[in-house]
Image (tube, rainbow, N blue to C red; front, side, top):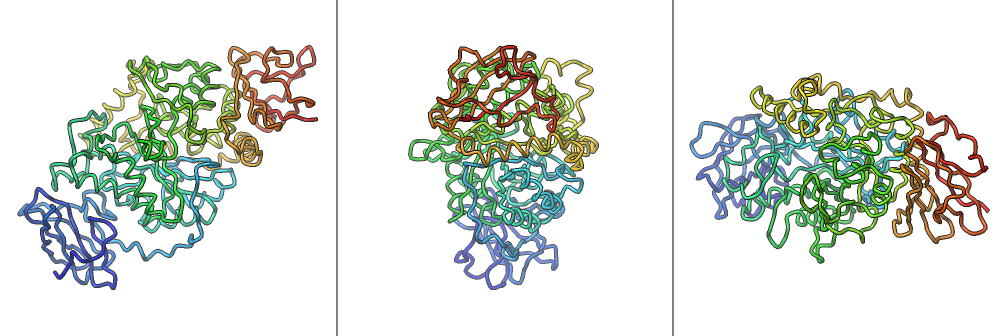
Length: 625
């Protein structure tokens, strides 16, 4: 075997090629086992016995093994063979053999890419399997230039870690270091990122560190300490980050791996409220710190999903925070969704969709910052009034929220065209960090439902779980509604969600609306500043409100949003925010009712000749001398 322990490795576990092509070094964390063998299946057949280290690892050198070698693990005297949990590729899926990959063989062209910073980003969430008909990295790469031209700056890939089945969302990944074979080979993902960087686009990856999928997870064969029942987790067993050293390293190193070997520009951490760690150095902070270290001179951005709305996630490490950059803001989505549809069932119930809620969400981020939520029957959130606006990711659609409806309907299908345009303008001009979900920019007709391909017994359980989850909505709890919920394991559920990019032309009015608003956001210095400290808002009607940007700067913008059914006259309104700066009058800068966006055009002036806001419209005004 030689002096394997002196071999310099990129990661603590897995198979890695040794510089000089003398072979591959294997290292496996299996403290519950007395013996670990590497069973090589191709291109040669051989068995390599690994040496046990003092800390529960087994390691050894396979001389002469190169890229493409297929292998499995034999544990003790068990006749079964297992994939490597730290595999870099699973060409036959999570139950098949692992493949040795050479990450240095890909020729990168992004040496001058600086990486993204948070301010100025427009995020685009996509699912690789449904973003194009082919559902591959290569096909998605061909659409990147179009996304750039729309005004997108940052692609957010839904999880790509290997999972079981022919299709799925990716949140049941089990081989966290292996990009799934469903979308291509590892170098195809590298090529996607390289192409994005060439176009000036960043790429971040959605990662799941709160649980592992139910099929293909073999970590228990190696150690009994990866999981814990000390903490509740609705998606399965919680990860033990507090006492299981091997588990902590397996996850802590993963984010850095994607940044290092795939040049990923950051992470989106799924369901951080279920990442439990009471140790002094919280695992979320460690994941972020190691990912940033792996980026070296490049900058990266790290987002968190936080159902519990913990503002500490984006506070500095030295102030007791987790050191991340931004958090998803469900409160903005919920208020906007209720305003658009008039329905506040289940987790929408605490929000009423009022004008004041939308003003507050745009100005202050979370609506719940420690007060009691009626849905949770407990306090929700932490104080966040001091956080900068870009720290809040705002959206009208994302994968969860679109799918949490009867048949995965898009927001434009659930409300009036005018209200949809008005809310789109609010989203894209607000000082937070906007996120779009794939196809939103051209009013995609494709739904997005939950789909997951599993073996029959597990598929049945998953389908039952999905129906039970949606039954939290009273309108979806009835017998007829429950029958109409798509079966997640049905191939048709997956196929229906594939985008038709020809709808960019068919729905050109919507497409132009998004492009023009994003251009205004990018080019207008007041909106581009993303400065909520110079933003004030006021309710000016039952379903209407005003937002004054750049307050006190002398170059201000007035955004008037009317989600109601009646025209709102603002000319003589007793509200100081609608008054133009001294010596000026308001000129119209943008109008969602323009016919080119599918609107009805501006109505005549109010009876007194003053400015009015049409029903279901957003107007943007600038001072004119």
